[in-house]
Image 1 (tube, rainbow, N blue to C red):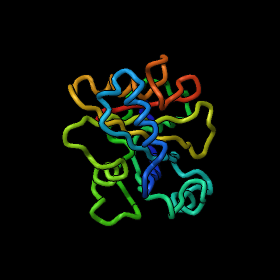
Image 2: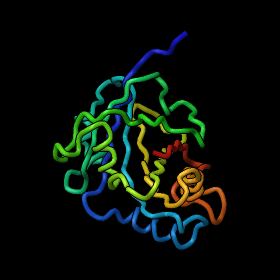
Image 3: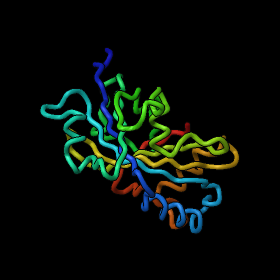
Image 4: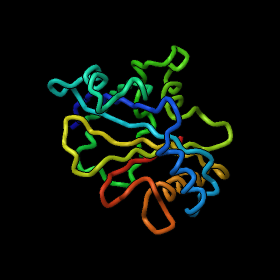
Length: 197
């Protein structure tokens, strides 16, 4: 029996200026964590997503509520992904591969039209697509969050060297599993998904 199809709507916001959270984390990770010497860059977006059409919720509402978007501080991208109705509110296991097509095609932004395109806006919000590094994207969100909007953080780690091991290096740098591993995700309190692009 096939699952019903629905739309996952995602709002990503990134800082217009220097993102001090990402800049500070980058320095600590490079200096203190195993594999930090392979970290070439770190970028962050705040992520807010919902499935279907929850009563009273839309991207327009997210953009109007200061908790989700501040036009003085943020650029935004609105994306929609059509697919199986697999809400991340359900017990999303950690260490799960993020769908490579997530967050889906862009449908709106405050950036110029040059940012549009299937991947252009997504990559632009995350610092651009690098030439010499492998991007590893990790999205994390608190366990036990209840709907209708799921909020979390999307991190992009730029990993140099062998692309075949980039995903493992990115995971070790992101997920706090040992004293010398991970800074961005607390696996005891957060669920997370990752993909190397």
